[in-house]
Amino acid sequence: MKQILCFGDSNTWGLIPGTMERYPWGVRWTSLLQELFKNEEVRIIEDGLCGRTTVFDDALRPYRNGSKELPLSLEVNDKIDLIVLMLGTNDCKTFYKANAKVIGRGIECLIKQIQSQNPSTKIVLVSPIVLGNEVWKKEYDPEFDQDSIEKSKELKVVYQELAKAYNIDFLAASDYASPSLVDMEHMTEEGHRNLSQALYKKITNRLAA
Image 1 (tube, rainbow, N blue to C red):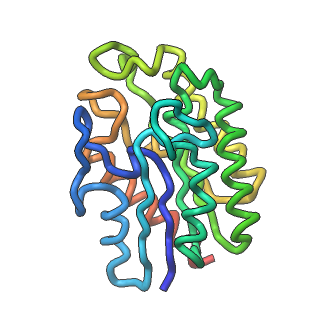
Image 2: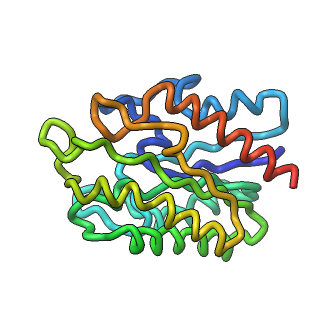
């Protein structure tokens, strides 16, 4: 049985745009990925958390620092064959004061943690979807600003370069999904479906290599 860990934020958890509710099984991309592997010996492990960052602590919410939680997740879910790593959106928030390159250094820390703790674990690094053009407005999420949108757009190139440097697989979620117009931040049902199909192809090729 191959074990695949999906480690990310609210778009991995499956937040329904404009709510604090979660998309049900059969809608969020992690569950769709499991269904695509239904005829194979593959187990998808969901580890998404709203507000999770790469390496930053959230002063108002504990357990959001991915670099502190990832080693525990890897140990709890022993013998992970492949990890889908998709973080960076929350790092674009204004109070972290991080540009795209700094966010890239954060995701690089997680790559190193995986390779140090489980050297045989394969990695699919996923750059997140871009933020909507009005996400910073008070009716959406004022924790972001207009500069946050530009940073979210720059992550694709930064992550792609990291994937090449570490010889790991790369996929840009923004090539397959866009933020909902409801909140400018989270994926629609269509986005979850498209991302699951793209990841299925990517993971299948990697496991077969």
